[in-house]
Length: 271
Ligand code: KIV
Image (tube, rainbow, N blue to C red; front, top):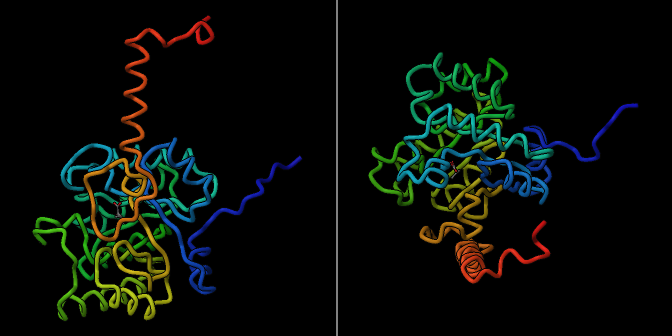
């Protein structure tokens, strides 16, 4: 007897079809098995194992310190929790900028050791050779332009990118080059909404925005930010759906007082 599952897995092609029929793509980050399982069960289209794990999970100020081994650990945990969503993994800083062979080796390690379905890389023209080499190995690549946090020390700030004509023009050219190279989708982070809309209209591949307005083909947010676990990050583009910082703090406070007062465990909770 053959066992078949009733859900349809989301693929890179599904995202393309969603753009073609005008259905918006939903994407969130996840870094661990338990939360990825919930996010997947809720019906998310794509999960990003972002290098924002460096901030959210490890408490670093930037995304730069996270290693390829650490990304593989997070990605393999997420993959074990997911049955339906497309799982995309960030190539971390320092694992692809050296040359295209290094980039290919890093992408292959992620695919082989985590079981994820695609990788994401930050940059345009500068990384094109690496993007092409990874694609020839059959690994789907998602691009990422606009605010690219791995270059934060070059930018100097996390403010909106591409507000000037020259940078906007480079972004438009880079997006076209990434599409021509064969990227299956593109993330645009923190750029003016009118520019993001123009890029999405110019490209056949889906454009997924974070702080890029509503004219793109989908949205991505960092899970811990939209759940309100991190209550110190308040950018304009963030919509909070829960206030888990306060809820978790309250629950832990209740547990502490139950232990101190000897209310927990009760007889019913004992053997
Ligand atoms: O690492 C990440 O979470 C990201 C998103 C912000 C797009 O790259």
